[in-house]
Image 1 (cartoon, helix red, strand yellow):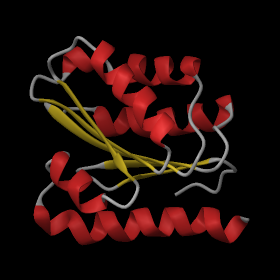
Image 2 (tube, helix red, strand yellow):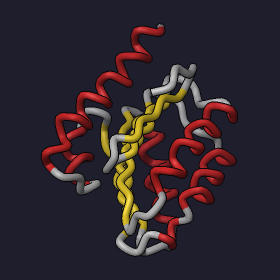
Image 3 (cartoon, one colour):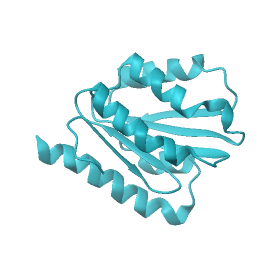
Image 4 (tube, helix red, strand yellow):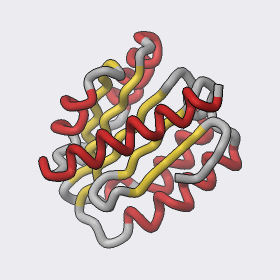
Length: 148
């Protein structure tokens, strides 16, 4: 986990976690995350992403660069992305973006930030990884609370 202002990320092997703080990430922070994400994507038929927003969101240009880096049609078995946020507005925006995605391999679910267990089930990670994912996510969220 890199110490950055508005974005933290962690590769847990079977799932890649991204947590955005109260503000959206800078382009530099977003690019650092993409630099870590690209190796995670190598040699996989499917990927699991867990994204958590504590209020901030990547810009449209940053989101576009992430989709370019991911290259969704390369994952035959799919991309499973769960998005956690308290904001009903953000959930609406992400749901709308998900409906615009016409790629059959992309599966997106937007949930309230408290629905961590449902998010983990949705991205279909092995149950033995659930404690590691929950601990990492809590640690990343705590890093933002401790900063403020």
